[in-house]
Length: 318
Image (cartoon, rainbow, N blue to C red; front, side, top):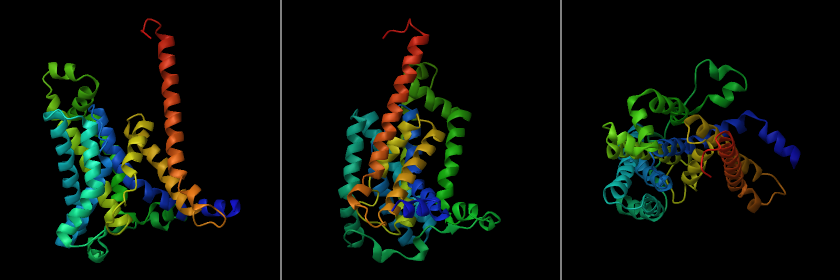
């Protein structure tokens, strides 16, 4: 069994699948990073991904264009983020409760919406055609390089967008006035307000961007990964993205590496489940065990860092 496992892992095909599986988690994790920087916890990533995934398929089917579907999913995600912001910031609802409500809409409301718009139950298999699926891209020159080309070339358009966004979001947060305002509002809203920054406006912008990124993750799931929408397809990736954001210390690059770790765990579960003599019940636990271990390591490193700060500054109150 172990020989089969090693033979499976040390192949370009396995690393290709790790990158493919990481992409939707990475979209949601980047959304979590932006919201966190503005002092907002977007617990509704899971529901936003589910709802956006459904509308991405519907828009692409109605327009017979995958690009329209992706843009539609992005806007639906942004609107859901703004809705959460309205309830939390304007109506003073607890942001966690607003996120839970969106998650419940994603879990049950999407089935009703699917039936209302199409008359279908449970999935959109009958709507799927090549026109509504996100195309793959073979990168010139790179695709001819042995092994490396097999790993990095041939992914969907959104896969490359997901990893490009890590750099773009870092630039947004640390090289633009908007990013400075987002971080200022998240760190000290009173101080930001005192110098003329509209705290409400910045938080609305941050949570709408967070929702838009989760919407792209939803579009990836339905229009490429699963090639159609079905109930339960997101399978906890929104919550895993929150864990990736926490493990990455709220930074884009850290969240990317954490997302890759979870993508590795998901890919490992898929490959191990095909081996003989391995319990499917134990295999299904792999991503969740990795999540728990990662959060334990994150908590331990955070406590260690806090102790060092207190040791260096004994005047800080304990």
